[in-house]
Image (tube, rainbow, N blue to C red; front, side, top):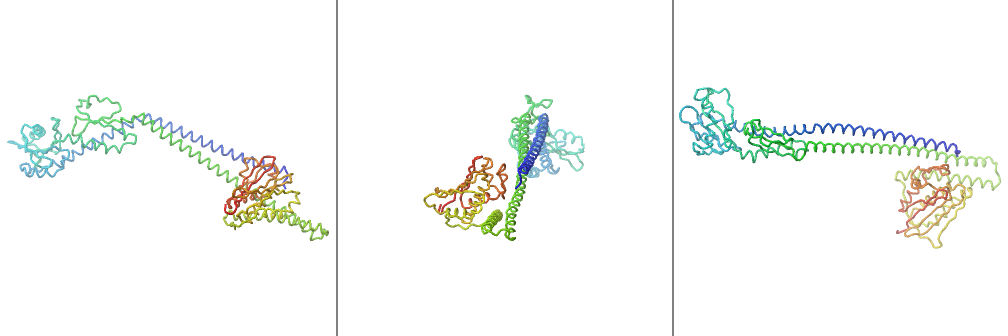
Length: 543
């Protein structure tokens, strides 16, 4: 058995090891906190810059959005004019051919089509509905005047016999209520011989096209802007291209192109101001940063906890090997010494021979118990321990176990007081060998930690649906913080007599496993300096 100095040195080394691990853990945690603080600082700095540029970013997004809506409208009418107004020169003088041509076109966004032949003499201006049906309009109708004004430039070219270098569509908006898109019809030599045109359907643009285009382009905006977009069509632009009353500072306003040149589309993020957008981004990013920091600290904590548990388990296993080696060496040495005495014939008195034989038997029993604990724990750990249940008289088990420990008790000078009620106890439903092992381990534990007090009490008592078994010693007691942990494998309480007493650290772990396998429970009551009581509840048959 090691002396007090050796034990104190061992405890000092373990304490320094725990202090070192605690210091390493605190260093890692402090490093994580500093890293998180630096990360948060960088996030705040970046978000501050984001807030400064939020207005420009929002205006750029709104400007791109507005341009996309207007470009879509321009492409819509340019494509329609290119397809619908490409009239063959020969069809100008055939109303049937013109009706067939215009009737084959898509009429969305068109109030009516028209065609007129150019040159000297009478010019016939014919109107057609989007479906190709001829329309009879008075010569002084506003639509007719708008069509003639749009055709006038090419009429002058035709009268002069000029040629066109390029055939393009033009927009005439001198009559805002009757906007015209016109395109010249040329012969093989490039001379204008007629004009085909269409009158724009303003109601279609306002009520159908623009709302659909605004919604379609909304999906391409950044998330914070999508729900707060407000688009307004403004008319009556001044020479500078501004509508009266257009003074919102955050609105983006762009004029229409190609058609409706006196209109402007004003778009504003009415529900989300740049400041609110920046604050929202700040909150989201800050929340994510805090969440990431918390996850980092949790990961560090879990890593430190796992490392501490692994280190502790490794230390407990090392101590287990040390304790078991000592437990094996001591009884083996005693058995060898007494066996040599008997072999060499140094003792001849029958009393001495019997005494030495009892020593050998007692030490062999200790070895057997230690080996059984190790083997049983191995079976329990691998799930190979099986139980055979039967009715067991717990009082008989107590008598049987005490008889097996008689030599050990007499050698150690222990007195065991057994308290059994006068009335017979009901049998418990258990594996008899397991009950013997539980009681043996509890008694060995009591004998080991009794110190100078050589008194152990074993008490049996009936309870509702069970029988209780209590084993009490008068030893140094167990610290409250360790009373639950002593049932863990390899764990041994520290300090004083508890530390100096050797053992495998498996006895109480086996007790808890076997008792719980029977549906019972085990607990301990202890006060420092006053001893400990281990209480086991065994279920009775049918409980």
